[in-house]
Length: 225
Length: 252
Picture 1 (cartoon, rainbow over the protein chains, first blue to last red):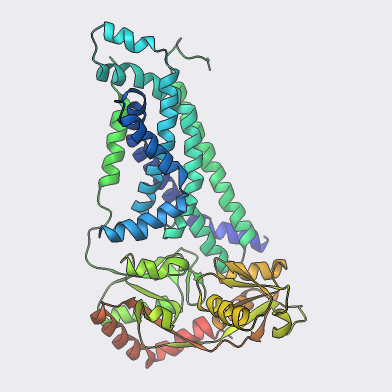
Picture 2 (picture 1 turned 120 degrees about the vertical axis):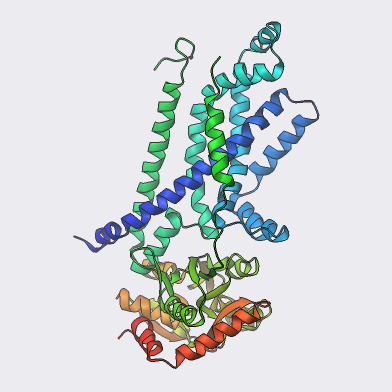
């Protein structure tokens, strides 16, 4: 067997362990981002007039600064200034989550705005409060509609997570780097890392596609599977 | 009415995020540049290994503290130390005046020369390698990167171009690719590269003064530094030290 292939096979268990860390970072960030993004989106569409520009400000801020800058600002700047000692892993999840919340909120906002306006009025006519109507009429539909956009967001965060290596998170990219510098098999190892990312993207997108089908309201969706 | 299923998922995720990561006894964290063989790297099983790792393990055992080695980007190793993300840097760090302003160093334990590494078949002298128009690789954030920029480029006015890399092995990779004429680095990793990959050779030194390696700790951690020094002094008198030098650095 060629030396390059041996090096990859040798490193594979170690790299796969790294992909577990990558996945936890990505899912954690998406979950955290989701928690923030739903209220943000609702606030931007239905919120009081003074709140809407604040949400827009948040979105602009977190979409406008590079991930690496945020990671450093947070890890070395904010954590030290506030005297809280968060691990690199936690900072990676929080920062990716804050940024993802900005993007996700726009996915959800788009989905909410795509719903017919009459629905909210109808709910009001039936005596539902606005909060209730948003929670039980608007959001269940909007979130379903958001899944395709959301799978896009997944694949973006997945790849962004490689940058967290700069803080010392032992994810796929960091590990590939370590093995490559030890064995000097850069090409085959980076190719292997690329392949692992491809598989992870495929798995995630498949999973979300399954979810999309699973939660589809029969006879209601725009397109049948 | 449908139950908002996603709320449950969100609750689970939030709980997971808020749960504390570590709440055990004090373990000293050694921040290492895992791309710096033979002083610090990660072995086949993913366990940190190398000269400094083994040496610090011995010191920790001798002085009765626990140590964990954590790979870290070299660029930000001093900020990490100051921000208390790590407690010590035992990873082939050169003792310099600039660094001494920010951190305290242990007694020196290794002397290092800076060399240029080129392709094995390259017919080059050090002077030719540093000629105008050539590209010379170096690891970002290292003393050699700083020294070359300040002395060879600014003071002496040499016209080669300095290319900065993430790690010395990456620079070697580009030497092999032919993108750069030579790469400047510490002699120990250079010898490591030569022993692992036969297509490169050491051209020689390029005028940078020898440097000493030491372990870096925060200024206020004087008690910890004393323990490190006590352990290090003891270790350097043992046969195990010679064995470490032989296993990791002078392999031949």
